[in-house]
Length: 279
Image (tube, rainbow, N blue to C red; front, top):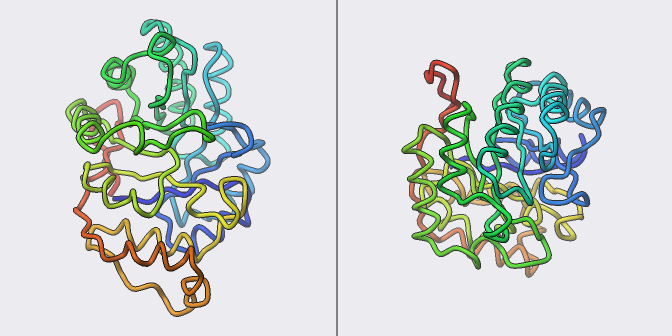
C-alpha cells in the first residue's frame, strides 16, 4: 500500500520525502477536505520534489465545467501527476459525469490523471451513491477514486464505514479498472485495516503533523506511518526518530508497529488504452 501525505508547502514536502512518503499531495487543510493550494505554492512543491515522488493536487469541489477543466489543466501543467476533485452537494449522476469529464479533459491535456473524490459523511440526498460514482469514474476515464470525509471536525472514515464496507468499495473500484484511495482522519491504528481492505493508497494529513491537521508535517511522524504501510509489514523506526518515539504520542504510534499488514494491489493509472501501470 502506498502512503500519501498531504502538504501545504515546499518545506512540508521535504519533510514528507525525508520520512519516506510514496506520494506527496498538495492541499491547503484550512480550506476544507480538498482545499487547493495557490498555484505558485504548487510549483514550489513540485520543484522541491524534483521528480523524486509523484505529486497529486486537490482542486476543490466542482462547480462549472469550464472552470473545472481550466483549473485541472493549470494544476497539471504546474507539476501535478494526479488531480483530485470532489462533487459536494451534487446529487445528479449526469451532472457529476459532465463535471468529471471536464476535469479529465483538463488534466489529460497536460498529461495528468484525474481522481474523483466522494465523501463518506455526505448527505445521501445531496450526493451520488458510491457505486454510481465509481461507474462514472470508469466511464469518463478517471484513474481512480478517493473515499474521504468532508467534515474534518466530524467522525473519521473508520467510524463511518466498517472494514467490510471499505473492502467492498475497494473491490468495486478494482473491478472497474480504477485504483482505490482511502482517507479521512486516518490514524496509525487505521493503517493495517485500510491495507487489509485492499486499498492502493492511504492518505494522511493530521497523523503526519505535529499539532494536528493544521499543524506541521514532520519526517519522524511520516517515517513511522510509512513503516506501518509497507507491504512487507512494519519496519523498525530509524534511530533519528528515537527522541520523538519516546514521547507518549510516539509510543502510541510505535505500539501499532506489531500489527500485521497485508500487501495491497498494484496501483493502476488509467490511460485511454488502459495499459499504463504505476507500481
